Each structure stands twice: as C-alpha cells, then as structure tokens.
Image 1 (cartoon, rainbow, N blue to C red):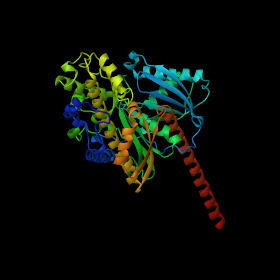
Image 2: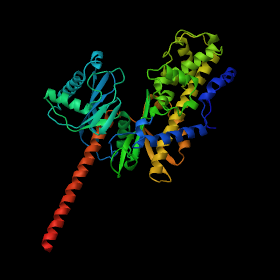
Image 3: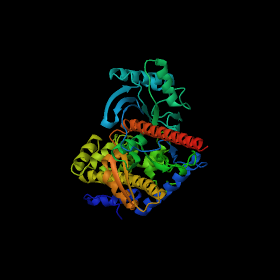
Length: 476
C-alpha cells in the first residue's frame, strides 16, 4: 500500500495511537471508490433534469476556450471576495500589471447594494484617474467570489451572500448590471465588455496563457474547488453540440448527499456539526485549510483525554475551537525544523509536553494532511480521466493550474497519488501566480479573440455568398 502513515522515526508510544489515526488512512481501493462516486456525481450535475438536486453543481461558466498564446491588449480586472477588493490593470502580452487594494468598511458589507457598487465604481474611477486610463474604454474581467448562477459570460445572478456580506437588493440580481449602473451613475468614465470569472476559472486561464495544455484549474487552500474543459454536448442544460466549455464543478459539495459517510471519522462529523453550515460542503471540510487545523485539534484532545498525550492535561488553548491553526500543520511537518517547530507551538498552546508528545503530534499532522492530499488526488483523477475518456484517448497529456496554500505546502503527496490513480494521464502541475487578477483579464482576452474570429468568419461567409450570387447572375 503506497499510503503509509509517515516516513519519520516513530517513538514507541506512537504505536499506541494507531487506532485514532487508522480511520484517516485510506487504501488505494478506497480512493478509487471515492473517484468512482465523484464520477457519478459529475454526470448528475451535468444532467438537464438532475442538476438541481446534484451535490456537485457542475456550473457552466460560458468560457468556451483556453488561451492560445496570441492574446494581447490592455484589460481591467476587479477581484471582490472579502473585506478588501482589488482593481488591476493588466497588459497581457507583457504579463505586467498595476494593482490597487481598496477596503470595504464593515457597515458597507451590511448596507445596500447600491452603496456597495457605488463604492466599487468610485474606487475603479480613482484607479483609472491615478493611472491615466480614464480616456480609454477597456474590457473588464470581474472575479466575484460568491455563489452565483451564471447565465452568460457577462450575466451572473447572485444566489446568496457569504463571507460576512449581506447587502440588500443584490441577491437574485445580475451583479454585472449592478456594476454597470453604478458606473453610469458616475458618468465620468466608461468600461468595455465585462466577463464574469470564478476564481478557479481564473487559475486555469492564468496558467493557460503560459501552458496551452492547461485545461483544469484547482484550488485547495482555505476552501477547495476545481474546473475543467467539458464537451458542450455533455452539458445538457445549455444549447449546443460543438466545442467545449469550462465547467465550475463546485466539488466542495461532494458528499453532501451522504455518499462519503462511510469514510467520515468522528472528528469530521464534529467539525461539520459545529460549523456555520452543517451538512454543507462535506468534501471541503475533509480536505481544505479552513478545517484541517480543527480536525487535528480534536484528535489531540481525544488522545489527551485518553491519557496518551500531555500527561492527560488539556490546556485552555487546546480546548478552544480554532486555536490549533492549519498553518501549524505545515510548520510541524517541515522535514528539518518540524520537531523544533512542534515544541515551540505546543509551548505556545500552554501544554506540558515531552519529546514523544511532540513526535506524536507530528504523526497526527502528517496523517491528516496526507488524507487531504490523497482525497484531493482522487477527485482530480476523476477529472483527468473524464477528459481522456471524453476524447477517446489512450493517453492524455494535460496541465493542471493550481493555487492554494494547502497545495503549496504538500505538492509531492498529491502529485504522486494522482499519477497512481490516473496512470494513463501525463499530468503537469503549474502554480498560478494571480488567477483572480491575470486570469480574469485572460478570460476577457479569450472572449475577445473568439468574438473577433467569429466576425471574420461571418465576413468571410458573407463574401463567399456575394461571390456565389455574382456567379449565378453571370450564368443567367
């Protein structure tokens, strides 16, 4: 079995903790089964009548192509997903950008939608003024990281606010239209076409400019999600048979229907029960940075109560939800400095530890981060295998654009596992530098390229028709 508990030396007491960690150790056969279950959920999400109840939503993005390397020009980008938002000017062919960060006051996050979008329009206007861009009409990529139903590339309906926002008059409305209305109220500048961008799609597109074989975007950081290029004929809820479209899987919801219950541990159940959204985004809660630290904390608390750690004494910090941060895991797992980091962190948490305690904590962190990497690998293997099967290829060579601190800290585990789970796929991983900025601009650039190619094709068809008519007249 290639999924071992860990590689470093284990003091004798570590063998006593196996019963706590064994539920986190997933065999290759179990991971293949997880992948098969996700494959079924992808089909449900793509179905015309089944997508409404599917836990993996498979949302069409209306992004119909990846970059081909010819994209060029100047673009604006807005990135709104938290208490700050960014305005960017991106010059694609030079991979150059200028960035301005604007704060959103707490009261504005809970005010009216008109106030929020007026604030965004003001910050965008100030940015254009300060960078001498106000006389230009530039296309804009808009990364809006809230749950939306995208109807076209420039039409996206907010389903619900998250992340502390609750602005009135926005849910159920087209956020692109609200932005345009706010800019129109100002009346002192104009923007060109707008493309709505999910941050996962932005990751794929920013990497796709550097590597044209990139057809998957994956984020595994605070949360997790992925997108990939699907054949349009398989996306049953939209019209069309030819070409491809990027699908935002929203795979964080995998397991919301109970299909992962058999591999959930008691600690996963507790994390879900005490979260702000019980029963929702089960897969995300098993693998993403927002939750991994809390899973480790719960395991350490249970082991301490059972007198296996810290002389059976739980400190106030260890007993407090959220106090064992996910960043502690990667610090404790450092090959060279991990043991010293563990000692320091355990001291800061007010624990009476010995050397064996510190080593056991390292073992717990390694086991839980490994499960995260392997589950993510199983999901990613589902996507690459689907692309290969869609195209009836014996072998697929593809690139995954990836972002997120969990990936950056544990790339080797995930890469090794996904290659074993998708042996007929040659996968390259490319870390995205700025998916929500450069990627948003790239979506707009690709949309412009496709529109230009479509116009040229129409003009060519028109000329051909004129020539045919002239030949018919001459023949008469």
